[in-house]
Length: 138
Image (cartoon, rainbow, N blue to C red; front, side, top):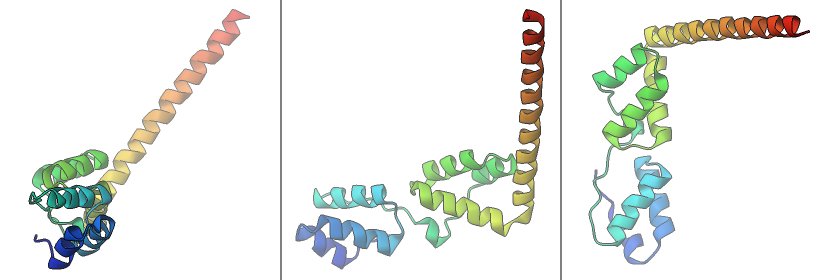
């Protein structure tokens, strides 16, 4: 991904905020990533730009494995580590894949239902223990 001449000119003229805004609009980068890129360019370095999730960043098999295991947050973290995209872009990319693949959505929903059941069972058990303690303490 290349930096447009417009952005380079904004940086040369010291319009850092404008350059950040333009870069975000052109690439879909997160604010932090765009700021880092503009800061690097302003100091004379090149920035290794990563494709945005808006450009349909493909998910690796490791990210898909995390999704199949119902680990949506881990999948987002892994995608960010692999591609360098921002949190919002990674979350959007993962959610697009989930919506496009009904079996993933169903699997994640099922895992969430099971986790909620386990939590409810544990909560009921804790409540029962507390009631027994109160009963025997009196």
